[in-house]
Length: 123
Image (spheres, rainbow, N blue to C red):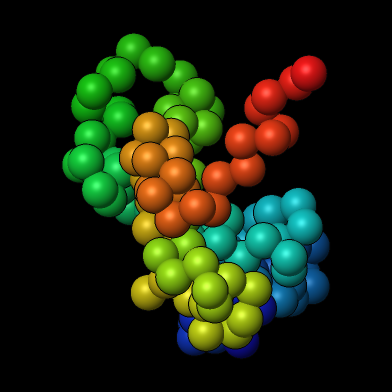
């Protein structure tokens, strides 16, 4: 079974004849993915061509058709909808994730008091 907690797929990705612990969708583990499971949510959105802000609706490949995909991917963040359960098994599930553009993510973080402005204010 795939190591991604919400994935129940049993098809295994094979490399050099050896079975790997991720399914074919999640076959290329992301660096430090065990501590950053939300990156698999972002990968799923990329594979489904859903690179759009789930708040304002901007679809980045349509909005910026001539911009490299790597840049477009970097313009969107995975946000924890309920930040109080972030890091807990129930908080690291797709129903607690949303893909937000940098602007919507910053606004949400400020409203929730989840933004550390000290790291941006150098004295």
